[in-house]
Image (cartoon, rainbow, N blue to C red; front, top):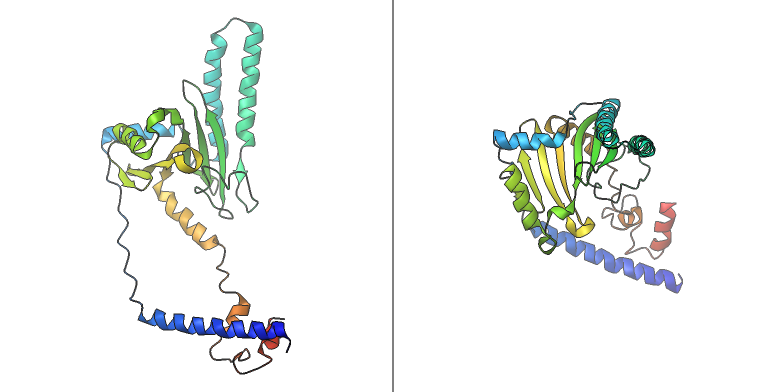
Length: 282
């Protein structure tokens, strides 16, 4: 056996000793404590539920993509009609109509089906809001009318709207108080007391739930998420079902730590063990 194989065999022996010690320690370790049940958000008042419902902005859970597009078309038409009526300049009116057409085209082009191919959204403010191979898709629109400056993301499951994500204008926070505490105070002042957990505030409004999400540290962003609670369980179950399988331990390591030595050579007593292990993997 050459020097490199001898060195590898010795390192394998040392590694096995460490594994044996680790197993011995594991037997003495106390059983893991059962995690407490997840806290539920307190129900909101009728007044606050109405305020939360306004976040739906005329959309309804269960809408198809075409129905959402039709509702968007209606909202965009109304917004641009006011602009057109606000001027008698024919050239400016034509430009406004062109802008309206381009905005609607951008919305339609934003539709994305999450089918495994990496998208620009996989590392973004909405990266935690979807999964691939789960019949999920998304469309988005920049809402910058009436003093707003936010983006609305429409999430579909099996072709039906089940969630909306609003990326808020961070200017709602004073520049010198751009933190979660200030954000929490503003949100709970508007929607009532919610369940605060880390950088998230949750309100339960019966058939739908709203989350305020702090993403200031990683994306300098704030968001509100509105979900259909009757569908969320199905989505999470599908994600669990389609989750990539755990690859487990490297097969080379498995062959080395096979304590019964039924399928693989004993690297402690066999001087050609390293060669045999390599051959076994082939």
